[in-house]
Image (cartoon, rainbow, N blue to C red; front, top):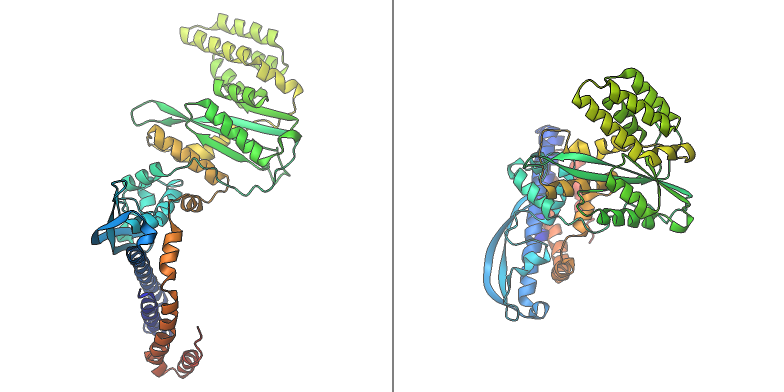
Length: 464
């Protein structure tokens, strides 16, 4: 390993650039850009050294690779890292028992066969893709090396391969004790690539509103669950597990589930043993859109709903049907009646239950629609599901990059053991080389007297 030599060489180059700035031979912006280039090159060199050291250690220690025999050596590999593209050579092995072939050094670093990027870049890509398009996310893989821009297809494949089935911690602390818990739900209609739409479902739990901040009220401890769930039971279990992990279940006396009356939302209320309330936004929307052709009757229906008078609602809707002049108006009136009467239990519950209301439409807009449906784009079901989950994780305060790295299949133990074998020798080499390099630093002979004296002081006081 030549890590120390690379570090010292880079130090010399950086030191010369610093002196150029101090002596007015370079502008600070140009120095900043050049410094980034030098540090990126140093990063690539160190990563290459670590990979090749790992490969050498595995090759020299057959006990660490039981069953694997050398098939070919010095096979080249190029992969994009956060420092840009690095290249290294490694050994190809064959397992006599299983018949498998593999580059063990690649496996230790979590590099999949034929992978173009390493795990760190994948984490950056997945994190960026949760906020911007796949194409724009590909530009963020190596910000200082735009020549290594990755395609939108590569980013999409990376997102789809990322496993999101493990629980992600959002540091909610110990289990809280609450008497009332509010659960609100709605869905986003995501356009599909083959036409039609896919429902991305969003459920969030909250303890209610906290102190007002200006004109806005903020919900306390909001936790989101989202995805494209063909099996609603899976969604229900995930929501329940989220509640159980954050709250003392025995302390909860009442749970309210508020939504637009969709079957899956009512199913969630039944699963949690909660009281269902029909979202007032959807109540008003149904009345206003369905009965726009008869404003006076529309007001009657709204007043009857506000007074929780089902008989008056039915009577007003009968009057609206009589006033309908077209088949379309009759159909809208019938749909309104079916919606209000069919969900009357959720409407009447507002009379006796003290729910906080429902703001699910706004949450769907910010968490899901902002990435999935507010722009002219189309998704596969898999892509929409992954993106909905990523957006929910971000809204929960989870660091996507850390999550991806924590769940990556990287055998850091192997890499650490490999590199550790070289540490004692490298420490001795560092002490020797640092004295020689610092002693020959051109800046020590600079015309800037104060700088020359400071650097000489450093060169005579280096300790390891």
